[in-house]
Amino acid sequence: MASNVEAPERWYLALLGFAEHFRTSSPPKIRLCVHCLQAVFQFKPPQRIEARTHLQLGSVLYHHTKNSELARSHLEKAWFISQQVPQFEDVKFEAASILSELFCQQNLVDSAKPLLRKAIQISQQTPYWHCRLLFQLAQLHTLEKDLVSACDLLGVGAEYARVVGSEYTRALFLLSKGMLLLMERKLGEVHPLLTLCGTIVENWQGNPIQKESLRVFFLVLQVTHYLDAGQVKSVKPCLKQLQQCIQTISTLHDDEILPSNPADLFHWLPKEHMCVLVYLVTVMHSMQAGYLEKAQKYTDKALMQLEKLKMLDCSPILSTFQVILLEHIIMCRLVTGHKATALQEISQVCQLCQQSPRLFTNHAAQLHTLLGLYCISVNCMDNAEAQFTTALRLTTHQELWTYIVTNLASVYIREGNRHQELYSLLERINPDHNFPVGSHCLRAAAFYIRGLLSFFQGRYNEAKRFLRETLKMSNAEDLNRLTACSLVLLGHIFYVLGNHRESNNMVVPAMQLASKIPDMSVQLWSSALLKDLNKALGNTIDAHEAAQMHQNFSQQLLQDHIAACSLPEHNLISWTDGPPPVQIQAQNGPTTSLASLL
View (cartoon, rainbow, N blue to C red):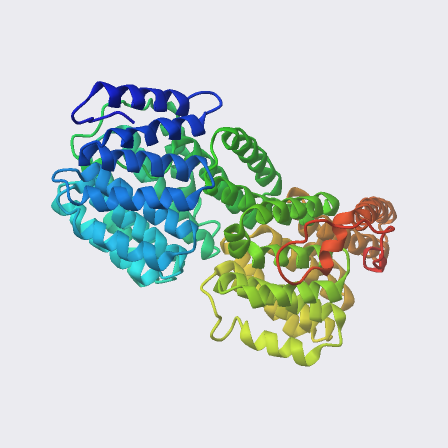
């Protein structure tokens, strides 16, 4: 607080010393700190001290109290006075930066933007503040979903950093722009930009931790780009590099030596946050690839790390990481036959979203999608339809929209009497013609849905064509769950057609793969088919063994079904509007049909 003090009169140093003592006490004594700083004005201080004290008061009140109006008043005075004092950049631009944050907190974005623009305009001779304010305004535009303006500002920042000789910060600006371009699906612009970033990162010689953090940023973008495209196999070399990179960072010690170029004084993320992020993208990969035990292992590690970090750090990004991790592990639980645990974790996501309106806005569609998947798993098809319809209303994300439509189509197929709605959906996710997204995985799933419908309609040759297309695509990118589902459905088709040998050739590998994932529903389906197949082939012992397996899977799923439907959280399946319900009333036991499991 007392750095660069001008005209250090004893009274000023004494009051500042007391204020700092109270601020850093444990617990902080903010009221006394504020009193000491306010006392400075009694001495009619010179403008430099007056402006700095207003900044200090505004900052303390903003960060430690709920008195935002008083904080705003002090920050506005600091900003106004500091503009009249020559060579007073730190106070001037810090006041502008904090004041614009406060405006955003009060939903006064239209006041924050011109303030930041003015500060950016007059800070061109101060590289650190000019870059920082550009980042801040770009972030503000991003939060408003104005990605075009944000990208323009990041481009301006990259060029400015190049001019002032900061290749490191130039890379940060370009990587940030690349991230937004990926969000906008402007892939034609992303590829050359990432290529340029790769060259800058590799050629930059500076602080090893800063260099490695740039590489992590670069590789995270590459990995998420592949995963968005559903290319689970192609991503493996990048993911391996990313994991090696984070191991390198964890062995490096933070250097206290400050960079010689003030424009280099930035960090993308703290080391600990980067570790959680790498765990997170590893979980995303494992989930898509169908390595669910691996996904569970990395989720546990990441959540444990997050709990430790959240004790010391209230950064909103940690809650975002936590929600995304939970979203993925919930999907894993539903596949592995742990519906009750999945439901409790969905409730946990609801609680996290209750604490942050922005988090809920960003994840509401995903939350309703997860509830829809849970409803399918407990055979509540009407509720599943309502949840997916709500999710579709809330999302603008094309990949998520396609994923939801695919699952909603599966609900209509199971219900068997929603032909008009079903064909309307299938026209919009036709894998043979104008498929809405570039995701390899989602297109393969769309072929599977077509195969499932043809199977239920008894059009077996058509079903085989669609399922072989799914198999070809899922094998190309190691999409194990789709492979297992396609194999068992093909096995079922061959069984119905009386081709028992060919059916066996499909069902046995499906069972092996489902056990490896593990996918409880496919195991249940496969064991039922193996029981009937072996009986038909005269393999009495194998038929008995398959029957025993089927009985075991049925019992496990039945017990989990009853446990899930008995939880008070089960009532979440009726929530389709507004914020998550604060309290969930208990109900008397399960109310759903178990017929689909038996």
